[in-house]
Length: 124
Image (cartoon, rainbow, N blue to C red):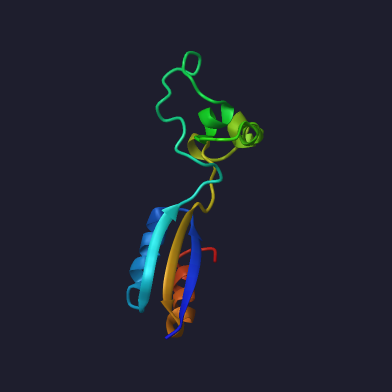
């Protein structure tokens, strides 16, 4: 049997988990829920004082990015989210669809699976 994959983007992990629970009635080959970001690394959760601490730049401090290339760090620092001049939502976090539900289903169930994730609020 052939398989088809779906990448569905949600605003919260709870939305993705609700969609996945509805998909359990279908023949799922594999599935995962992940958060993704435009910047590499876990970043600045351990910096106590930015004046005395050692950090690589504004992109690391405000975006939580671990940049191996200084040019990438400088470019990320030009982001409105890094400057604090963004209206990115609560706690100045960038809002949007940063949760991806990846599902592999049997080909016969693909249309029904697409309908389920769309009804659950996904962008596919």
